[in-house]
Amino acid sequence: MAETIQLTGDLRRNPTRSVQVGDVTIGGGNPIVVQSMAATRTQDIEATVRQVKLLEAAGADLVRVAVDSRKDVEALAAVREQTSAPLSVDLQENYRLCTQVAPHVDKIRYNPGHLHHHEKSKPVRDKVAFIAETAAQHDCAVRVGVNCGSIDPRMLERYPDDHVSAIVASATEHCGLLDELGFDRYVVSLKDSDWKQVVEVNGKFASERPDVPLHLGVTEAGMPPEGVIKTRVAFEQLVSQGIGDTVRVSLTVPFDDKGMEISVAREILADIAAGRFRSVPPKFDEGLNIISCPSCSRVENEKFVDLAQDVKEMSQYASEYDITIAVMGCRVNGPGETDDADLGLWCGPLAVNLKRGEESLGHYPYDEILPRLKQELDEIIATQTSNQSVR
Image 1 (cartoon, helix red, strand yellow):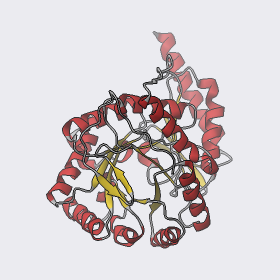
Image 2 (cartoon, one colour; image 1 turned 90 degrees about the vertical axis):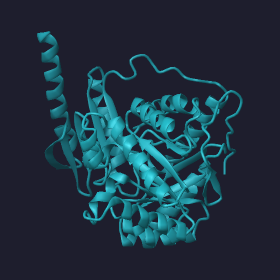
Image 3 (cartoon, one colour; image 1 turned 180 degrees about the horizontal axis):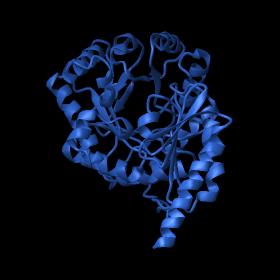
């Protein structure tokens, strides 16, 4: 395990409570915990164990693995037998899997926006109680993970034009439910692919619940160096205000390079601790914006990472246009988290689904998607150019 970085001196820390995750303590003034996530298919036990050990060797304090089926659970149990690293599990849409994964992990993460997928007639409180009771029984912590692309539909109805309020309200509601249940061993994350939104939602939540440890991250930050810059500016603004107890840097990089997420996180934290802050490059938020997920065990085709790189290279000619392209690796987050992009791609096992805004344009083989994407990109550029000439 790498040397921890204690933020001291003039850097105030929010008075969050301590949450024990295996032999790691999050919050309570302890050093900020650095974590990452295995990008391999969980059922590929050998590759997943290798990735967990790679991340641990890079200095990860905590490693997350995703499960979405009983076969994933069986694989997780085998992974647990081969590593002593503190493990967190990412529940997908089936919250009832927590009873099967809890014996093998130290923390359970669930997304409030996914709880409505199963047993729709059952109250949310009952589902949260099921997770909390299971976690308590197996000595697990919990993370309430709210994500911009999968916000609870009830909160979107309540705040139709205010995603920040919808995200914060979802998180505070679940904190209230866990508090009512007498379960306080939880942390919260509020993530977005827009670093400015990350700063805003975490700042707002921290002002309402300064006692709750926060997990910081810019989801789908993309590829280096842009993904590193987005994450750095968000962390600098939040951590310098005392906000944040554990962090994850999400980068789209080859599986063998996932340790970069850990080294980048520790470099950013070390710079903040030493008072070294980087300014945002001029016009950083202008022009072409490519967001892409960091890959995880939900990815059904490993060509996804190469595709993200190819999209970045292909679209460089559009760098001066205010266009967002989202490249997502799975069916869980892909459909929702591409809605706000001008062009979105989410990857399946055999084909790539292409969207323009919320409209689906069909699915295409991996070797045919780039020309089709370029066609749509050219149309958007032509429209923007035409509009500018009219002005």
